[in-house]
Image 1 (tube, rainbow, N blue to C red):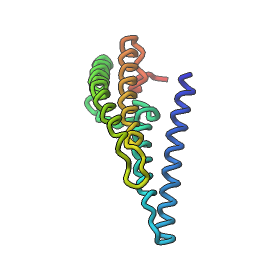
Image 2: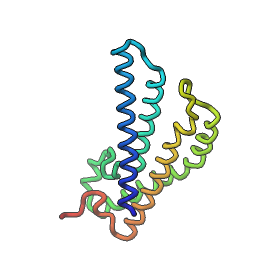
Image 3: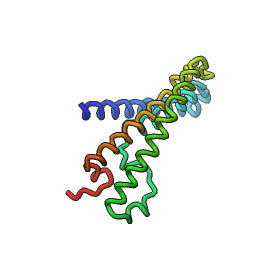
Length: 161
């Protein structure tokens, strides 16, 4: 089941990126080929970019591949790194959990407003932000569960094959 969900999330992310690329190509051809810029391509490209970034952050990019400043972290013994991972999971997961209700309220409130050209409800535009927050909460809870069970070594590349 987990593999199926991962592949589905990757397919959605890849599909969004392909759609973004196609809209970008239409934009280039219309602007430079026909000297007739299309306003909807600018707007749709921005919306798709927001979706690609937030969707990928929430569901596609593994935790170990996110940007991290880990010079000090990598110099620490394994036990201290485990504590740091736990504290980071508590901090980021807790903050995301705390922000989720207010963010959802605002996203839901924005359903009444639409984008200027296409009229897309802003709720649809910013929905992946709530999904990203929920993804951070779930990943953080999973990390804490793995630390509690002693199964977290591969998250930081500590397991030797």
